[in-house]
Length: 116
Image 1: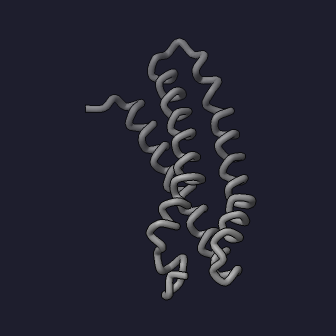
Image 2: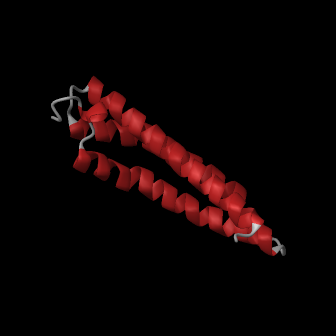
Image 3: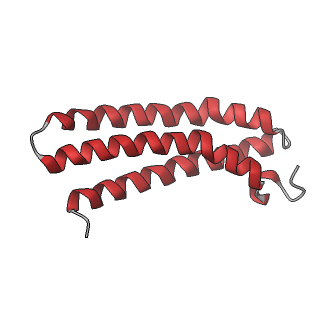
């Protein structure tokens, strides 16, 4: 039985996390195709372009939620705190954990059929 503000927070956090993951994953796939499977070059280009866009997006979103911490309303304060935490987790997961998992599991739609 979650409170309404927690449901809203969970929805926003999950949506942003999935979006950031999709951005990174699709860009990594494009770079792998463009560099003929060179993992290091693909990852570097992906993090330079899409990674920086994800970071800018997180900074802008944090800038819009952080002022809500100053409110006296517990639900709004909780929303701001939980979304702030979720954004930090989402950006860490998209920029650090996702590339590691892609490298370890080598999905065919990123690495191609031969898995090189």
